[in-house]
Length: 364
Image (cartoon, rainbow, N blue to C red):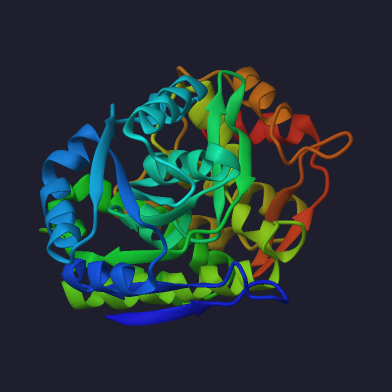
């Protein structure tokens, strides 16, 4: 098990480690035991993940002598809302969970965001740990302390910055994922290649296995590399006020597409489409070569990710969701664009007509 230090703030109070390895649950339990973050632990997971991984996680923690309970929620983005958060808070009260307790987020991005948000507000803040079970969560959403829930008006409109005590990335979890979900999670890896390390794009292409899941050693190295990229951005800009905003590449349009689709589009699909839209806007406004746009669309296609927006999603609905985006400043929402792979920048304002034209273009 490798450990990556995330160093935050002048006091280091929010600093923690990302632990990456395969079959690390027993070692995870020992780290938790020795760290003494809490006197009791509550694992929060969705029903599907809990059925597959709950016994292993609870068993490892109990073998280490930890006191642990499990709370389950329905799977899917619809659970990442205020009513689910309030219901979980009431269940914690009934369990007798106090400020000396710690939550454990076992699942993908929905569970991680929701559990982190709950931990940040329950009794004015209790500890929590991230145990991500999807590629998307392992390389992105579990790292950095962004928590939140959705409103009907848009994604993540309620949220906090609240760092976990630790992140435990167990690659063994990925062995239970459907192939489609593995490839969907690679959308975030593509993002890292476009904004920070272009050589990742070629490595992704060469590592694709059309007949099954990626090689485990290759995947472990890829996940660890992405964790290092994400932690560098978080260390430079914990509160998302400067350079960390580069990580939003593809996400502003992607989140709007998710919301406008009624979340029939998954997060990975939304990000893939958002990156294609951002690349096309970059070609129009920032001189990104057309061959780079084609290269991106080709790679996403080979990953099994969408590159065209379904006709059923109205462009007007996408633009309305963008208008309500939490990143809005003044007259518009800043968009991350590319001059070339590895050279992103933040465009403070992009004309709505230009965005609409690209959205319509992507429906053909």
